[in-house]
Length: 268
Image (tube, rainbow, N blue to C red):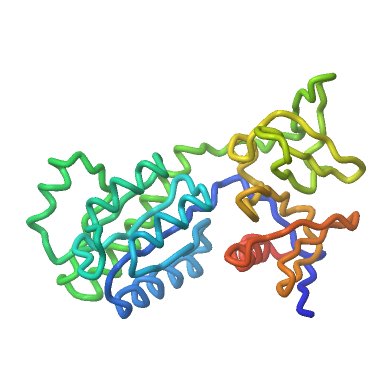
């Protein structure tokens, strides 16, 4: 059984993690963009990660529906030859799922730039593939910097709240953030379980709303929001997160590596 101990790892993030998505019909370009972006993130210790790369626009849309990502950065090929959707149609559908999406087109068709304006697709950048690898690399790196700055403006730097407050219908409760292990969608519609060190509480609410209130928490699953500071171990085989008090919760297999990277970014 493969488990990873995280007892010596600390997390005290106040900036939102920026998720980056790549969609191009050529695998070699997807791999090249991922290498450029990942290397730049690591070299500059940026709060960003490549969340998904795919040749199929529908795969990206399905992923967004499941993950409910907000504020993502999307590098899209306009001319997706093997897809029913072209890049512009894909961008419009992405916006429906992620209103804060930052769209970047990567294309050889500079004549399509005007069409993006006419169709009111607000794009962060339009990168031309045929300008050479060095220029494309520079354009991608500059775009990532701009995207992170814009996302930080959307979710400004602020002191992390010391407590989480809620009304359980009988009384008004206040729980210290450092005591919360995770939130979980309850069996009742629009109800949430709060798992803390010493008790289980239930109140009316939504995971997505709590995530907006507590950006330092991590969406481990579409129905689970984890406090990374409280994670002491991750079981990669059973997809389980283990907390100091013995509590456990599920983590999506797609999100395990992202959780590890997020925590390991601040090793003690």
